[in-house]
Amino acid sequence: MRSRADMHLVAMVNPPTSQYAENWRHPLSRTDWLDAGFYADLARTLERGRFDMMFLPDALAVPEDHAGSYATTVRTGGKGTIYVDPVVVASVVAAVTTHLGLGATMSTTFLPPYVIARTMLSLDHLSGGRTAWNVVTSTTDAEARNLGMRAIPPKGQRYDHADRVVRTVLDLWDTWEPGALRLDDGARTFADPARIHRIPRRPDGPPLSRGPLTLPGSPQGRPVLMQAGASERGKRFAARWAEVVFAVADDADGMRALRTELRGRAAAVGRDPDDLLVLPAVQPVVGPTDAAARQRLAELKAMLDEGEILRILGRLLHARPDELDPDGDGAALVLAHRGATGSDGFEDMLLRACQAEGLTVRDLAARQAMSQLKPQPVGSPSTIADYLCELVDAGAADGFVVMSALYPVSLEDFVAGVVPELQRRGRFRKEYEQRTLRGRLGLA
Image (cartoon, rainbow, N blue to C red; front, side):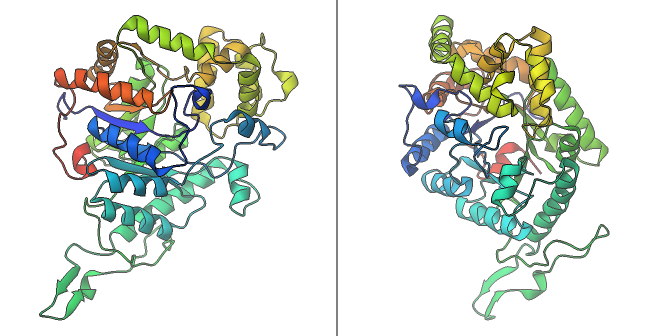
């Protein structure tokens, strides 16, 4: 079992809107997220805070509404309007940091396993063993059409294909045995061909690549596998492959139940449950005092426009404008548009919140625009640290994916206030003691 000090912190970085709809308009937010300096500065902040990793999500299409239009998304600066290629960003970050992990997203539905394996391993070598592959199957028809397909395959088919892709990527990472790269001048041997192999045929069918890869093995054994599926099929996939699970749960009970379930599923397929870390998403609002943090939250809410957030919710759920009665039943709206987002887990979370609290459509739109459907602790560094420590102590989390309302100030506030408080309590590292990401996460 891990020690009480082994809390893990990962920052999810997805400007310009992050999880707060008005991020790009806020006077405290930077808008130079198309400049390498933005990511370099943020990475230095996270490394100063001894974060485990910067995690870069991705999507391969601008989100569309019920009519296939992207107008609402681009006009409002909605999430997904802009995604800089995560591998390119991770390369920038690798060049300006020494320890910070680099989590980059690549889709198993659209990318060949050889491309994924070589890209991730290249980044891993150039960063000294700091890479994680965030495994996604993608979710939308818009993405499929951008990649030459008529529609996204059904969820089960996508995950079945993802199983084969991940298996092939792992096999490719193993095509060079340790010590295969010799550089033996006396024997005139660059690499030992006896230690470099093609992928063996497995009982479940021919591999999706034959190998070998054009790179020797990883400095950390292999890049870390990260995943975020919350559906029944997604959890089966996580139990088989994931080493870090980015989890979204409503509350402490939901976090604990999910972590317990995933660890149990991992054990059932023969894995050590301690080799699967569950990191729930949190979006802290930090202030020097509890009152100051509550004031910051109130200021964020005050910037929202009801008409805009209703249009954003409508786009998200593929609802027509005439269905968006502000005083209507939020749960009914979600139920009427099941499957619109491509994420069963996310829609389940919306539905639970609506049913538990009787949210109207207006309420749901505001909560979604503020990312308040995910845990959002508000308070001083001590208050936020209390919250995080209680969740870890209750078996609800191995650490957290920290999400930002504002870039970069939310993460700067967290690093300046919450991290020192966690360190003072002996709950978070003061220095990086392991060179590789895998070592730092305590993974086999």
